[in-house]
Length: 371
Ligand SMILES: *Cc1c(COP(=O)(O)O)cnc(C)c1O
Image 1: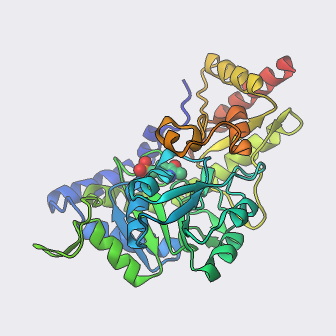
Image 2 (image 1 turned 60 degrees about the vertical axis):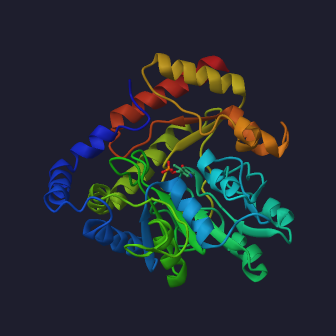
């Protein structure tokens, strides 16, 4: 079965370097935070064009720690999109703030900034734009709507390491930005990992404290925090993989262009890439004309030995965990419509031309007989 992501191929392509880096961490037993994490934090911040990166336990904690650093809590409202992974919204609720969803743009599946303009209220304390699938949100519009009102922006960049908006990498637009290094992400660790980036030294210090029990010194705790530190082994692995991130993203873009050429003229919509953005294709998402066609395509691909996914089949406002919000079907119609018609195809740097051809033949073969 051809997987959506093949982590083993990624590892093999840099095995010697990674093995050495892991052995070095074990030799000097710097297992939690430590010099390997510090080196990665510095390199990752500079890669993102930010002054600070704070390594944390995972991407969800990155969001939680960013919101806490900004003082978000009960009485505040945080705006985000229902077309995302649940981790985008979970920390908002957990901190006691109110979640306000806004729908997405039907072409990009990203935050609809006109809907954002209509949703901002005097209670709005922060906005979380999600650079979903590897494509940056229209940050000029987000910043224009938030800046003068004193609303914080926290980028969810968990799927977009290295993506650019108007030539600048994501992670440096918001007050803070959150990255996940879950193994399948464009920059993935060998376990869980995450980071918060910011250009604000005070916020970086707050985040650094919160990830480590609110520590001022070994036995002195300033605030209640978390145990959410990046491991030394993860820092060392990530530091090696960071050097190859641009090469991997370049390969993803090549594969996306190949897919796009082959799907041209078929009854499918290929990803729409906004003006002034560089997409890094964490996921390659096609939109079919109907739910029946989408479900049929997934069945056909599976029977042909090709994995396919749906990101995401259940919009956040319809998740049982968010049932308390009292939102029903048709609250966010664009997201709901897309959830029924999208499919993710295999996408990772080491995909071969032959495999892409095989996928394209399977997709076009199905669409030609189905319509
Ligand atoms: C993966 C992901 C997260 C959460 O990251 P974890 O490291 O799994 O906690 C948050 N937001 C989005 C959009 C993601 O894809």
